[in-house]
Length: 165
Image: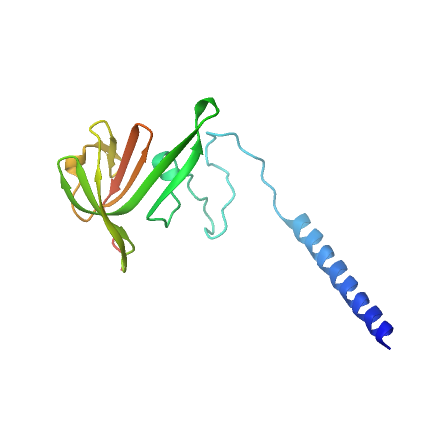
């Protein structure tokens, strides 16, 4: 009796595997395929990404490209020229104060604070404020900012806080 129950269980498992494989083949055969675009190609004709119905998701560039969307602080190791690697550190938050070359940020979410940090920004840092070239002294309290530091370069990208209803 035990042998027949094992055979029945094996037959059910085999049938389920066959049905699952068939469904997977049918699903992949019906999926739309798009040709790969070379780097730098325009986004025209790009297929919509999941979660963005009817429109293509914009490709992130610059300092924001290496920072995960919801992360507030971290370090990332990225390949550099010549077969070496570079460690980049990023901080994201709201500007609390700017005094001289020191930028104080409150890291966290709208509802919870992770920590408050004061960063020393070198004078040769690239600063962008609302997508325009700027200086550190033009940043104001309440602006959202991402600071990426690595090697001898520092990038500061700031924008006015978005209003949400």
